[in-house]
Length: 249
Ligand SMILES: [Zn+2]
Ligand SMILES: [Zn+2]
Image (cartoon, rainbow, N blue to C red; front, side, top):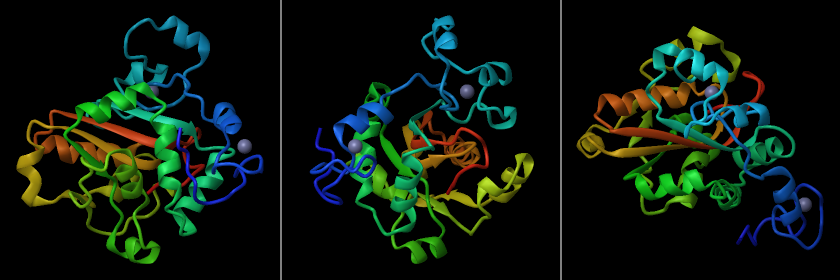
């Protein structure tokens, strides 16, 4: 697997040398695909996985509430895949990716995400891959949208860079709770009017680096549904385990 020839010549995690950005041993140890709820992407315990025999395993919360721990937006996302937990060692890689001018992590994360056969199948079946947008102010500050870098690394042909737009700056979702998260996002995401026709009847994949509670992804999915998308899936690199413990764009 071509896991990056750039960045360090030592493994970011164990400092093995010479190495790709993450050495094969660390990939094996920290990024092996694990069973996750197909709605909220939280890890499923082994016992629960074994108990669930249906094709689309859901965690108890998603089963109870009809999806994604938030009944009001429960059906906007058809599925969500995550590659790793937002935890050691990935949290520091994501911070580097996002805040330290290191877009070169994108192909590394994308290669790890593509170890998941479900995501591979989705990348084949969707018409459009939409990165979660940054506001203009954040984009100016950072110089690149990390979600766009990731989307391009996953599917250069199907990535639509500017279809989803963030119209204004919002408070970090990780600092808010429940209904405040929804209020914070209300009206902040929009779809480029000129492309709405192309969304009609289409399968769409949303891409982001980190998912905290999924409110932002569900809000985007809702917009796409309103424009007639037939299916909306999401793929993220890292999933936070405890709400509020991480970053969310
Ligand atoms: Zn290593
Ligand atoms: Zn779930």
